[in-house]
Length: 113
Length: 115
Image (cartoon, rainbow over all chains, first blue to last red):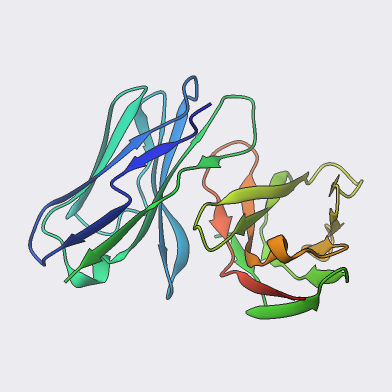
């Protein structure tokens, strides 16, 4: 079992650049979640998908953020243009129907200079 | 909106001793789940223990147990026989049953284990 896979693990970019974070959920899981962790705000849900369909995107901070899930095994979180305040650790998690636990990936540490 | 509060930013414990981490939450729902997650320096979020609100019996996982007080909206984590590997950030989290699957997290408690 490979677990949730995220790439890249670290990303350093300059303000104004486009950033794309990637996630591969655990095979067979039908729910996928994107969280952001910062010192100030802690862990917050950005968006989640059920069966590849976005269900709750109320946590997406603004139009600069977008997320897609084109199929059951891949999701992206895109920030365009990036800003220094977007610097954070971004986690992807997945869950199987009928199971309460969300399994987290290792996170992507994003630094926007 | 649901909120989760962890009032202890930092805690420390001697190896082999017992420590309790506090968590309170606010919700108008009657059916929900509560979780404790551990985040070691590796940054990986690991589920430690979970509790279903409809169950009166407190959950236990080896050295980890909870004290769930539904009326008081309190959900503390007890770690017995603390080990050096228990040192980490601990997050309390809430999720309603049915409806949104969003996990609502507390700000975390940093646990230090002293040898």
